[in-house]
Length: 294
Image (tube, rainbow, N blue to C red):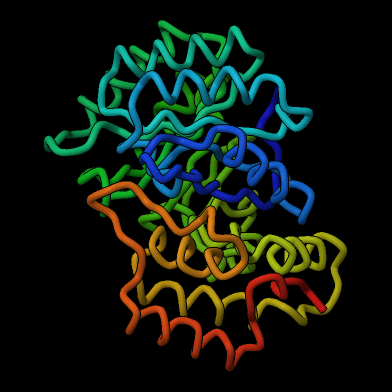
């Protein structure tokens, strides 16, 4: 399956009280986001706390994703530093009919472009059937993709390296590669990105803003007046004041208590932060279960 343009939520992972992954609830949440307007969702990745989840639980998640009726709308974020584990998880996905991936360079150590090139080259050589979205997020990985490296990877592996999620925002305004998908990582970059030829967004906050983000996208595609973008960006700016995982889980826990657990060392917002978040969102008339374009 090809990577399509549009609104992608970086999907949350639902955690049980014993700190295991609630696989069924996680997949149902991703399915709900598709029904709310997302063109696709990334299961796993940073918002899904994939770096904190065991390999065994990732395998269970993959096996259960495979039986979802929305399987073709899912991208899998492996969330691991290990090259061999990346490859193993990707091959398991392929056996289950999932060939679209969001892959970040390994975190912790410092790398140059040549090292990162070799990392993705190894993945492509071992999993040539894959469709890979590069993940540019210097804040988390410690590495910032250069335009030259992205162009080199896209040119040498055009069937496998098909796009980039740009959460460092040094690429989306300037990079121009034919038949290559570019997804900024924030709602505040959605409209500008579309105007520049980008493909959409991949965003954590689409867990709560999917209908609004879809309306902005559709209005742009249909050349209609933008009436929702300002509100969408204002909501994102409120969440940007906090850890996004903590903020989204805290917000949605008012809708359903299943969202009120995150994996240590992450935590929900403090009571003070929670009050500030909900007060600011209230001024925007944005509430749990009321987060729709109206």
